[in-house]
Length: 193
Image 1 (cartoon, rainbow, N blue to C red):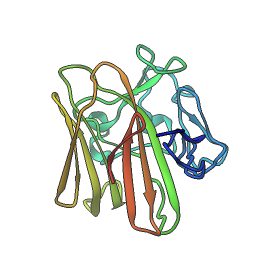
Image 2 (image 1 turned 120 degrees about the vertical axis):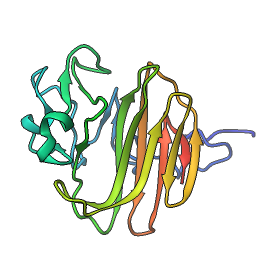
Image 3 (image 1 turned 135 degrees about the vertical axis):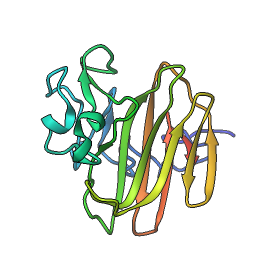
Image 4 (image 1 turned 30 degrees about the vertical axis):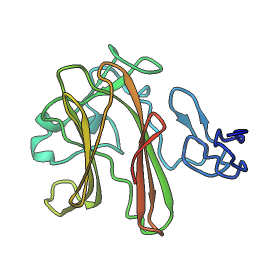
């Protein structure tokens, strides 16, 4: 390769640059989390009080089934954080839901930072539709962070990936509803499309 363009692509023409929100030539700037003036929703957990449970403190975050709020609700902590002083601790049994709306068109980026301690696993999913307190759900993808590696289940396709425990990892999900495609990246590396 003789040269890299402004996006760092070998032989590119600079037209493929994405900002940290996944928008071509967008204005979002990467800090320790993505600052995006066009964001539909952002939460750094700094506006809550450590020790509070997120469903009981937020209008946006919910538990999967309010019948089990004491089991499913996750806690705001001030003992581990990427930036600022707080984060959301999700432990075994917690089941947190962030409804993203009933969008049917457009392209969206959903990004967050995850910390999985050694000896533990983690999980998140995106649903085509989901309703709290209901079994009316259709999964789009499931992402598992296991003890030795991780994997994505999209339909009947499994994609495996490596990740590091005991460090913050940046996860980005780009969802294009118009083209009916999505991709998932960890620390900028494409894992699945």
